[in-house]
Image (tube, rainbow, N blue to C red; front, side, top):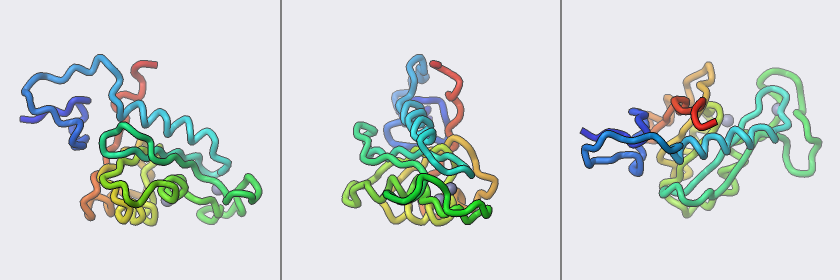
Length: 166
Ligand SMILES: [Zn+2]
Ligand SMILES: [Zn+2]
């Protein structure tokens, strides 16, 4: 049986699957957790008053950050939401802001995002060559997560190590 290196069973990313039968040692912070914390720091730069979200996109080897993003208005526009009407704040979503900068030619990208994605962002990730989407908090509407899974992109709730190595 394959034991995930970070002891998170849902994390089926290829780099996380050790097949040597040795019980994984999580004495060091997993790289997945490091990138999730980067996404959390990026979320702090969001100018959205509804919800602050941060995103990190890496390559398949988790060696290179290929793009970052957080939600907010378009460049040059006022650093605030367009509207206070719920669901209509007009901010570009964090995942969109990251993926628009990520090279489309990079395959098997990995996304780390602080909140589970909406349906439109899930569709964008499906079309962007993303294999795994790690998220810290589940949005109340699971539609985006369900859509990812149905399209073969693996969503992973990643909160097991959030209190460790602080
Ligand atoms: Zn907003
Ligand atoms: Zn979205």
